[in-house]
Structures are given as C-alpha cells and as structure tokens.
Amino acid sequence: MSSPALGILETRGMAALVAAADVMVKAAQVEICGRHGVGSAWVTVLVEGEVAAVEAALRAGQEEAAKYGEVVSAEVIARPEGLENMPHRTGSKDRPVGAQALGLLETRGLTPLIAGADAMAKAAAVSLEGWGSIGGALVHVIARGDVAAVQTALEAGRVAAAQSGDVVATLLIPQPAAGLGRMLPPPPPGEAHSCGALGVLETTGYVPLVAAGDALVKSGEVEVSRINIATGGRVALLFKGNIDDVQASLDAGTAAARQVGELNATRLISRPAPELMACFAAPGPRKERAAAGQALGLIETRSSIALAKAMDQMLKAANVEYEGSYKVGYFLTASAIRGDVAAVQAALDAGAVEAAKYGELVAIHLIPHPYPQLTERLVH
Image (cartoon, rainbow, N blue to C red):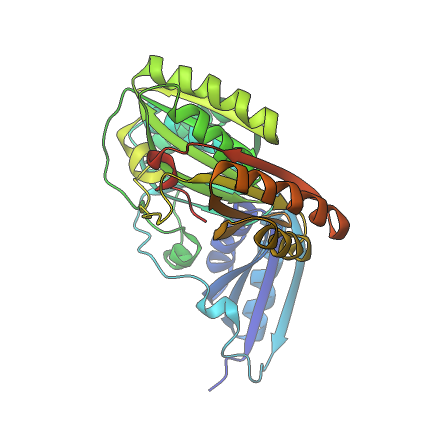
C-alpha cells in the first residue's frame, strides 16, 4: 500500500543534506527511505509519512539545510502512485548509527579532505567512518566519537583542510537520529596501518595524473597505494614511503603534472594516522597489463565524440592497441593505447588533430617506458 505522502528535499552539498535529514526525522513522524545524487553536488533525501508530518519535516529540513549549503528544491507528494522504484529508495544502504556524536567535514577536492581527516584523527579520540563524493568535486568524511572529541576534531580538520583547498562546510550532530544510517558513506575499505609519509597529488583530468604518477615512481622509493576519483574532473593519486622519498617524488610529480595539464593540489602528510590509511589509502586492485613493457600513450578530451573520432584515427594511423578508457567527470574522458614508441607518438599526433575538430583536446602524453608499479594501479 502506498504511503500517504512522500517528501523530497534536494540540496547542494552533503553537509546540508545530512543536517536536514537529521532534523526532519526529529521534527516529525517521518522515515528516511533513501537518498540519491544526480551529480554536480546535488543530492536528495526522500522521507515518507502522513501529509502533515511530511510538510512539517520539510519546513524544518529546509531551514536547517540553509545553514550549511544551498537548498535546491523541496516538494511534498500526497498519495503517491507508482513511485516505489524511485532511485532514492535504492541509492543508499542503511548503516547502524549508534549513540555517538557524528561529525562531517566537506571540502572541494580530495587533497584538503585527506589533510583534514588526518588532522581529525590525530586531534581527538574519534573514528573515521568513511568518505564519499557527490559530484562537482565535493567530497566528505564522517567522524564519530563523544561530542567534545568530535567538536575538537572538526576544528582541527577544518584548519588543516583550509591549508590545501576549499572547505565547504563542517557539521556536528551530537545525537544523530536512528534513521540517519542511509545518509552515511560506505565504511573504510582497508585496515589501519602505519607508514612514514603519505603523498597526495590531485589533478583535473586523468592524463596529467598518469604523467605525474610515472614521474614520481621513477624519482623515489615509493609505493602507489591507489587512485581515488573525487568527481568534477578531479582525480588523486596516493603513494607512501619514507618522508624524503615521498617529498622527492611529490616534487617530480608536481612538475610533470603542470607540464601536461592542470594540477589542483598536493600534500605531504608525515606519519599519517593509521585510520586515515584505512579510509583513503587502502591498496587498490591491481590490473595485469598484457602490453607491459610497451610505450603508453594517453589522450583526453572534453567530448566523447571527440575521443571516439580521435581513437578511430589513432588506430588507423599506426600499429597500436587500445588499452582502455576512463571518465573522471566534468565532461572529461580519456583513452590509453600501447605500442612501440614511434607508433604511439604517430597515433597521438593523429588523434590530437582529429580530436580538435570535434571538441576540446585537453591533454596528450607519451610514456616511453612505464613502470608496472604504476600501470598496475591505473584505473582505465
């Protein structure tokens, strides 16, 4: 049987949505049935209950959300018909909430978020409960603990994050509502562990990140942990080692990224918190590359049509093989090819000319001798 009413609240920013969802459940007899994101940092929460309760909840939610971000829209649907399969109902999984306070730090880009999360874990007795992205390069991390600890951690995280980028919002919920579990990101994917230093390098676009990764693994004894996508075209490479090697590698990667495309931010974190490593730097899956040892060529455009036309010309222009593609958002899409150095260079030259006819050519790059230590972690 259909619910008497559905309430839909859409915000720009996750802090605004979580704050609103918590207040809505506390303000009236409504239940959170899910959330959904459409990109560009727009996120939606869906609640259900009696019409009057849903109306009261939405009023309270809009007021609270406006303190932390932008309210996009709010709507009550009385006696809904045929909305059982809305994506909001299936777009998130419920997680236990518990009685501890909840803190949320939201930034634009992963580098400030990782810096802030490390400071949070070191500043007070809190646990990092996971991180997520909602488009538009907006990302957030959740911390749990007693109220005083979470408050201390959030302030330390805000200060540290602001040194590397933009802080969008911080949020403290002393007693989170039981139904708030659907708003939380997945739990940390790895295990807590220590290392001497963690390097973070973030670019707009996949090609400059790969170029930076190639330079940094060749400049120091470092281990690539994983590549994390922050959406909005942002992508970050995380690597670890002793502090001197990480610094040397970060310098080399920074220079390479700037030569190829747009560098957003870098950060060296000395003795990162073990909880931070579990949350952000758990080793990513390895991919065995059939063309290991051959040159690697990459091309990135701001148009799928441009990339498809470029790839067609590249494969016709030289004896190269297509290895894969990847999108990082913000209309950016990249492809990789393999072959001998001369063939890859000829293919890239042909692809660049063709891509420029159909859209914006963002970047091309040739790596004559790619290290498996990097290519095994690449996500294309």
